[in-house]
Amino acid sequence: MPGSDMPPLLLDGFLPYRAARLANALSRRLAERYEARFEISVAEWRIIIHLTQESEISIRDIYTRVDMDRARVTRAVQRLQARGLVSKLVNESDRRLIRLALSDSGRQMANEIAGIAARFEAELLAAVPATAGEALLTHFDALETALADMPAKLDANR
Image 1: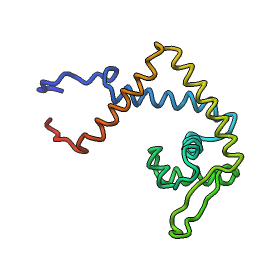
Image 2: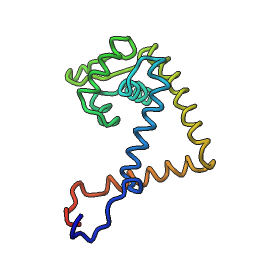
Image 3: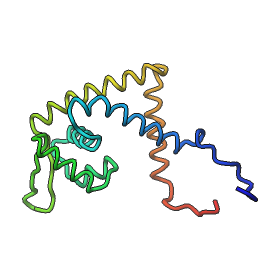
Image 4: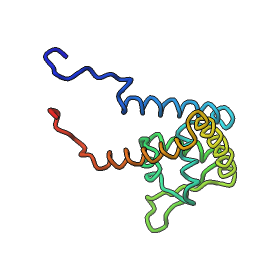
């Protein structure tokens, strides 16, 4: 920028840009492995896998955890329910709260997808030193903590 003392931002060396680019590439490559076989989208995959973490989970919990908008999660849940992979359970004490659970066929699909994901991860980690995967996760934890502790808005002049 003319008159600025700041050096230009070089995207290939900018962590947020590189992390976003890598995350998108990882998601696309993994999706190639399960989309054709199971005819599910990335949103559906994320919902199925999150449902393996708990026996029941609300739609609100899912869209918060998978970082997708509510409408996209709702549409994906509808498609999964139509295929008999998830069921909706109404909370009797608060009928507005819908909880989701995997059906038997949903659990079977989740197990197969987990195997695909594990093999994908193993292939990726084979490209780096043996301890790098664990170190990466440790660094991800530290970066996520730093982000959570960071103020939402910074002074534009900083």
